[in-house]
Each structure stands twice: as structure tokens, then as C-alpha cells.
Length: 573
Image (cartoon, rainbow, N blue to C red; front, side, top):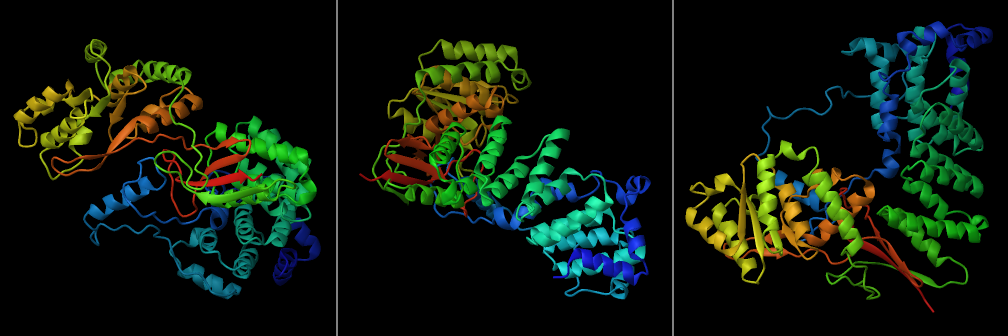
């Protein structure tokens, strides 16, 4: 591939510029740097690509398909995606008038390098001649266009303008990094250093990633240190430097950078952690092994689930430990909470008394008495509800009446709710149903006799029609004690976000998974409920075993879901 230095000199010769003049062209002109063509601002789309990790897309962001099967927990990885697909299937198809093109500016690119005449003709024929080169480069980045075609466009720009702007060089740099053309990255970096006194965060990030793969990798560490002096540095920048250090057998430097990420409360990217597990044997001393075990503790403390690729590196590392016989197998956990491979009981999901006390206090202070409460209810209604609940014995199940009633749109709402409540009452459960006052008004969907029978099976509290019932449900359930469950398909994400810190939010999510029931299927008179989980999906270990939940590559998991796949590691005697 033609070197960019050679390419630029050839371009300058073509436009009749001598070597001395060429040097003059590349000397930074401070007045021009602040002109529109050299403005390094948010209008430059380079930062947008960095922020979205576009140039990592092919390596890290993979298209994921849906896992088959129904009846999985609403917290199981992929459940949200499957619900979205089912809901979409139920919607009427869009008409031609409804459809909106996602990218109106898509246009064909040349399939081979063009001369100046060819690019000039395309520019004249385009509908955006004033911003043509930028738009073309953005399209090249999306399509992964061959670099020689991109160079021919830069040649055209240099001939037309006598110079190449910071913005276009940055986009060419992005294209080089995307295609892992590290020699080109070095060339562009050298040219940009000669032309410009400083770079924006996006360009620095690209240069760090590109240089880290070459024998000039220490320059990426220097750039990282410079960035730290002027502002916060992303975990992505640290990760690229960690990988470069490990590749060049600088284990101490890699761990120093890793520790900085932890101290700054940054989420360590998986590829950086994977590089530490995949480090050469020369670095695998006792201290290195202890540090890797500490990473597993970091996963547990922060409820982090490694991806499938990282999981395989962890498995290989354990199996390669000298003088220890570890064997790993991929597995799942039964409904009773046992590993299918080794039959070991997985850690219980139930909170300890101390954890429950902390959570109860946080729920009452942040959700029930928080600033947002009275936007959803009134002080009088809240007071009446608290008196109602506190004057009665604890409940076994609290039901979101509307949520349950609306589960099936093919039946009378009051009948659907009555079927569920009567089924639970037949099992001896004390039940509280939270409803709305409009349910008391007889109608085709809310029949009076059903509501009267409902009140015979359970305590009922009917809120104002505009009140939000979730805070009431949470208080009634958590105030009744650790045995009480609640029935709703609402995932309560807004209320989890109201809690004061990440630790309390993790406790809430753990409690929620252990206490939330959902309707698995419904037929008139025969509702089936999905039981709550009884084991915790979190990394756990003994002296002779590790059980690590991990994310499958082809299963989309949202933040309120947990994986269903595990790595079972056992130390053989």
C-alpha cells in the first residue's frame, strides 16, 4: 500500500509545489486553525464516531439473534428482546407512506480510485457540493471503503485547495484505524503533528489505538498522560494502553493502568481484562495470578457478567495454571438452584436481615417519602394507604390490579383479575390488590359482581385514577416482610433509579428477582404464574470451584436482565 508520506509528496509535485513549499503548507497557521475549515469543535463528526465506538464496531458490537423458547423469567437475558419482537409482530405493517428512509444521504461510492477529473465530476453532480468531501468520507467510514479510494479523494482535495483540512485527515485516520492499517496510522499521525499543535479527544483516541499496535506503542502512553493533564480520560483509552503494554510484556505498566481505572471508578473494558488473562507465560508469576483472581472479585462486587469471549479466556487460564487441575464446562442452573454439571447449590438470592433492613429504609426514604412521590399521589391518599396497610396483618402477595387485568385483552378485565386472585386465595395466601377508582364504576370490562367477589378474596385499595400505584405496591410488599411477593410485569426501573447509590440498587434488583411473580400464561379460570428465582445470578466461588454467569454473544441482554449461561470450574483432586 502506498505510504501516506509518499502519497502527499506526489500530490504536491502534481500541483507544482516544491519540497520547501510543501513544508510551508504543513506548518500550522494559527489564523487558519480557527477558520471554519480548521475548526476543531463539536461540529466535527470525528468525536461522534469515537463516542459511539464506531471504529470498534466490527470487533466488539455483534448482531445478536433471539433465543428460542417462552416461559423464561422476565429477568433472563433476551426476554426483553423477545417481547419487543412479539409486540412488533402484533402491530399492523407500515404502509409505503409510513416508511421513512433511515439515511436519505446514502449514495454510491466509486469502486476504484479516481483521478481529479472523476472526483470533480461526481462533486458537480452531487446535491451537496459545498460539503461534498466530508459527506463522502462519512460514507466511506460506514462502508469500510478501500484506503486507496480514500487517498484518491485526498489527492483531489489537495489539488483543489492546496491543503488537507484537520477534519478530513481525522476522518481518514478513523478509516485507517477501522481497517487496522497501523502503518498508515503512523503516517497520518506524523503529518498531523507537523500541521497542528494539538488534537481533539477523538483524534487522540484513534492515535492511541493505532500506535498501540506498533513498535511505537510507548507514544500512546505519552498521549494518554497528556490527555490526563487536560481532562478526564475514557476507559477505552486506558484499555488500548493496557493491551499495548501486555503485548510488549510490560506487565507492571498494564496493572498500573488497570488500577487507575478502578480508582477512577471506570468500568474496565472486557478486551483489556481479556488481555490480562491471555498474557504471555513470562508474565504469569504469582503476583499476576493473584491480581487475576482479584478481577473475579471485582466482577462479583459490581455484578459484572463477562462476555462469551472473555469467559473462554478465563476458562483457558484456569486450565493452564501449573500444578493445579482445573476443568471448566459450560452449563446452566436448574430451577431448584443447582449447577447442572457439578450439582453444587448456587448461592441463595434471599437478602440477609441486615441487607433487608438497609433496603427497606432506602425504599421508604427514597421512593415513598422522596421528592417525586407527591407528583403521583396526594398526601391525603398516601396517609390513608399507610394507615390501611399498617392496620392489617402482613400480606403474602401484593397484586398490581390493572397490570394483571390487562394481561389478556380478549377477556373481561374484572374476570381476568378475579381468576388470578381467587386462584391464589385458594392456596391460603393473604392478598392485597391495588386498583384504581374507575374499576368501581360498572362497565362492560369492569363488572360489578366480579369486583364484589374480588373484595371477598382479598383486601383491596383503590387509588385515584391519576395516581401511580408502583410506590404503594413496593411499600406494601416490603413492609409485610421478606416472605411477601408481588405480582406485576412492571420492571420498576424508574423506582430502582431513585435509590441513593449503586449498592442499594443492586440490593433492590436482587430482592426484586426473588419476589416478583409474573403471569406465565392465562386461560379463563386457569392462570399460570411464573415463580420467582431462588438463586442469585452472580459470580461465586469456594476453595475448589468457581461458578461464573456469562453473556452469550448471540443473546441481547438489557441492564435489568441476567444471563442464563454459566461457566462451571472445578478443581480436581
